[in-house]
Image 1 (tube, rainbow, N blue to C red):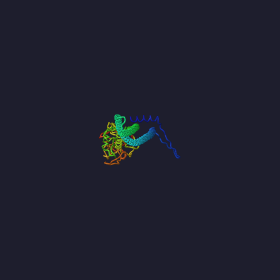
Image 2: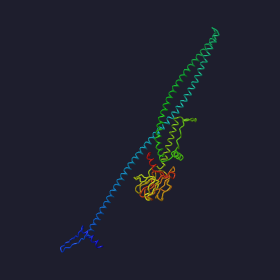
Image 3: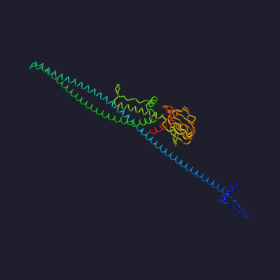
Image 4: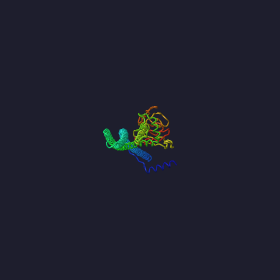
Length: 444
């Protein structure tokens, strides 16, 4: 049975590969090599295997080369896009900084002008009160003078009646006394009339000067109103983006301001309200508006302090790939779903990592799953974590500022490749770090 199978196989191979002889001729003799069908089949099959393997290997190498080229091109394009975005953000940040500086300069100029106008207003009010007092004195004097004039007229009339009743030919002595009395009364009446005219003229001048001062006060009020409007608009433009940034980060702005104010250690402390009265009276509308602007300035200053202390920055400054976001995701090792409490930025091993805000290092070492881990405690109950590092450059208890280098990116711990796992925790609860990063992009 076995022989029959071999014979059939030999016959079938002989149809495609007939027996051949390979002659080898030399000077002395001639020899040949007999090539059986089986030998020819084995040789052809071996050659086919070699050719097939060569084709497959070449295709694999070609595909790898094409894939690597595409990956490099994609990485290069991503890097160009990211660099362009960084340049745009830097330009926008510079623009915002210039606008803030210009607004601050305008505010300082306006504040100096307000101080000058307040001084002028106080001086004007003092002059007005003095004029009012002077007008009252003049009016009182005028009334007394008019009463004296009327009394003198009554006495003159009585004297004339008495002289008429004494007879048509009074004595010489009585005539001289009457003439002297009439001369005295005439001089007194003349002086009284001159004094009355002078007082009336002074009163008229005072009224004209009061009208001029009223017009000047109205113009000064209009200028103050225009300056106040500009300052209010500048404060709104400056404070609103910061307020929006903190609210977008999920922070209560009122409690934030209170906490910063309690720990405020800058020179001068909170701005002092303006008061133009020392009599305990209610502030004027201008003083109320000025105090509201000062409140906004105080809030802006406290927001600036809070923004410097909160982690509003990226932990990576060089080119990176955003590989994983915050939330539930599929575990690449177990296949199940688990909570990813941060965001991942991938890059080469050794990429510098930086603190995203001012704080104190509370952990710097190995932690299961996280690998080499750095924890930084910030103000307002915020903590940031930087995991899977290849090198740690800080130690526990060290105080760091935003932008300080804390180590290098790596692949320590439970990872599938080199990256940094960045977390933000508020009150011990993990929150999405992109809220802080995106909120800061709208302002810085």
